[in-house]
Length: 114
Image (cartoon, rainbow, N blue to C red; front, side, top):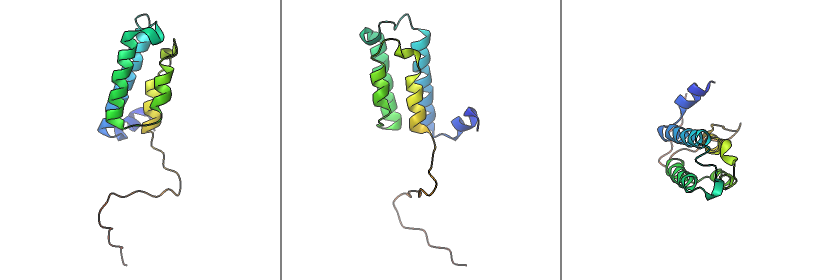
């Protein structure tokens, strides 16, 4: 499956999260001299806070966001696309063999009789 097929299979809010994460990482990597101060850069910190807020609003709380936020405090860690990696981890579709599907609340469907 190509990335484009994977991207099309996502829910709309997951697609928006991918776009925001990639945009934030590209901005931090491309504008490295602006954000070179690492943990002391107010622009870098503001961008990370905004992205974290947007990610939690779009995807809900997930543990993958903690290491991402912590890595942003290390100078030069912005050269690695941590937001993109976190969004990939949260939105990846992986269903284990034998795992049962959880149905929404409501009456159970009638069994088929043949």
